[in-house]
Length: 86
Image (cartoon, rainbow, N blue to C red):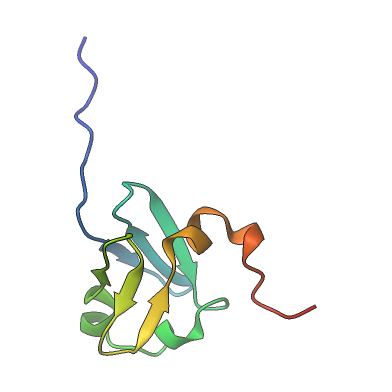
Protein backbone atom coordinates (compact mmCIF):
# COMPACT_ATOMS: atom_id res chain seq x y z
CA UNK A 1 0.00 0.00 0.00
CA UNK A 2 1.32 3.43 -0.96
CA UNK A 3 1.10 6.30 1.44
CA UNK A 4 -0.39 9.63 0.39
CA UNK A 5 1.64 12.18 -1.45
CA UNK A 6 3.31 14.88 0.57
CA UNK A 7 1.87 18.31 -0.03
CA UNK A 8 4.51 20.86 -0.91
CA UNK A 9 3.55 24.46 -0.24
CA UNK A 10 5.77 27.21 -1.61
CA UNK A 11 3.64 29.89 -0.03
CA UNK A 12 1.18 30.08 2.80
CA UNK A 13 -2.46 29.21 2.21
CA UNK A 14 -5.37 30.12 4.48
CA UNK A 15 -7.46 26.96 4.81
CA UNK A 16 -10.19 28.07 7.23
CA UNK A 17 -11.53 31.19 8.91
CA UNK A 18 -13.48 30.49 12.09
CA UNK A 19 -15.10 32.64 14.78
CA UNK A 20 -11.95 32.09 16.89
CA UNK A 21 -9.12 32.56 14.39
CA UNK A 22 -7.65 31.40 11.13
CA UNK A 23 -6.04 28.15 10.04
CA UNK A 24 -3.25 28.20 7.50
CA UNK A 25 -0.69 25.93 5.94
CA UNK A 26 2.69 27.62 5.94
CA UNK A 27 5.56 27.17 3.52
CA UNK A 28 7.06 24.55 5.87
CA UNK A 29 4.06 22.31 5.09
CA UNK A 30 2.62 22.49 8.62
CA UNK A 31 -0.83 23.72 9.55
CA UNK A 32 -1.10 26.45 12.20
CA UNK A 33 -3.93 28.12 14.08
CA UNK A 34 -3.67 31.89 14.46
CA UNK A 35 -6.12 32.98 17.15
CA UNK A 36 -7.82 36.37 17.18
CA UNK A 37 -6.93 36.56 20.87
CA UNK A 38 -3.22 36.51 20.04
CA UNK A 39 -3.49 38.35 16.70
CA UNK A 40 -6.49 40.72 16.93
CA UNK A 41 -5.69 42.41 13.61
CA UNK A 42 -7.48 39.54 11.83
CA UNK A 43 -10.71 39.49 13.87
CA UNK A 44 -12.63 42.18 11.99
CA UNK A 45 -10.74 41.94 8.71
CA UNK A 46 -12.28 41.08 5.36
CA UNK A 47 -11.90 37.50 4.16
CA UNK A 48 -10.11 38.66 1.00
CA UNK A 49 -7.53 40.52 3.11
CA UNK A 50 -6.95 37.53 5.39
CA UNK A 51 -6.58 35.21 2.39
CA UNK A 52 -4.03 37.56 0.79
CA UNK A 53 -1.03 36.18 2.69
CA UNK A 54 2.49 36.37 1.24
CA UNK A 55 5.71 34.70 2.34
CA UNK A 56 9.27 35.95 2.26
CA UNK A 57 12.44 33.96 1.52
CA UNK A 58 12.44 32.53 5.08
CA UNK A 59 8.75 31.55 5.00
CA UNK A 60 7.64 34.39 7.28
CA UNK A 61 4.06 35.52 6.74
CA UNK A 62 2.94 38.96 5.56
CA UNK A 63 -0.51 40.39 4.91
CA UNK A 64 0.13 43.52 2.80
CA UNK A 65 -3.35 45.06 3.00
CA UNK A 66 -3.50 44.52 6.77
CA UNK A 67 0.13 45.58 7.34
CA UNK A 68 0.55 42.48 9.52
CA UNK A 69 3.51 40.12 9.83
CA UNK A 70 4.08 36.86 11.69
CA UNK A 71 7.45 35.15 11.87
CA UNK A 72 7.16 31.48 11.00
CA UNK A 73 9.32 30.56 13.98
CA UNK A 74 6.80 32.19 16.34
CA UNK A 75 4.18 29.73 15.08
CA UNK A 76 6.58 26.78 15.22
CA UNK A 77 7.80 27.62 18.76
CA UNK A 78 5.27 29.94 20.44
CA UNK A 79 6.85 29.33 23.85
CA UNK A 80 9.90 31.34 22.68
CA UNK A 81 7.74 34.34 21.74
CA UNK A 82 5.57 35.48 24.66
CA UNK A 83 2.96 37.98 23.53
CA UNK A 84 3.14 39.92 26.80
CA UNK A 85 5.99 41.48 28.68
CA UNK A 86 6.86 39.96 32.04
